[in-house]
Image 1 (cartoon, rainbow, N blue to C red):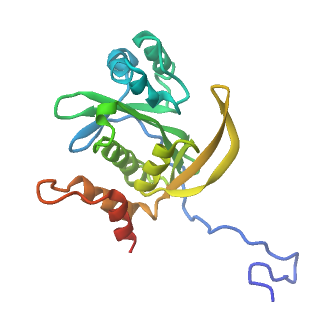
Image 2 (image 1 turned 135 degrees about the horizontal axis):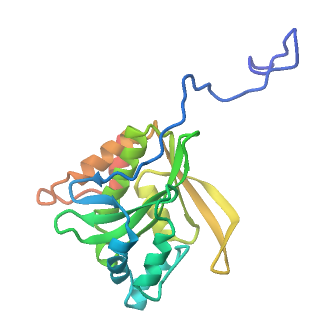
Length: 243
């Protein structure tokens, strides 16, 4: 038996299935680099001249610290001037759109995040080029920074899809994507050559209709009073929202 979508018609060939029509869809605005402020951290559009020296100091100095560049497309850098030059090449560009992550309590620059692969016509973009100084890894910094980026993309700009891609061997990034509520969508084999080595790329995404439950879990996690009880794992809160 044929479905309604494929049943032959009197005036032509069978109708083939297509996706759900999006009545009234319009291309979304691009992120504009406005400051995104949270309770503990804020995202400020990266300025290579202002931020370069501090970024280099936070991400260099020992072999252990410089491991954070292992899965990045650039770095480590010989000095602050070389790092600044790399970010300066994107000054004025809107893809990738880089932000410095700063602690609001003291203004310390703790890392970098960005939007990239921005496709306003399709309502899709990616979070990437993410790194944090070792002292800020494992803190609330990445959770709040990603929350601010996701809230801006979904709630203000009305995007349908936010992606997260990483080297398939980058276990830490893959775990972060799942912890933040992204769904694994598959592996792109032999996707890139990075630093002369093969890179298989793991793809993750979060959709607009999934965002409300992830947002609720993130807000609950970020507002948790550590003095009251041990903060639950974010992945647990995301799962509870799903249930």
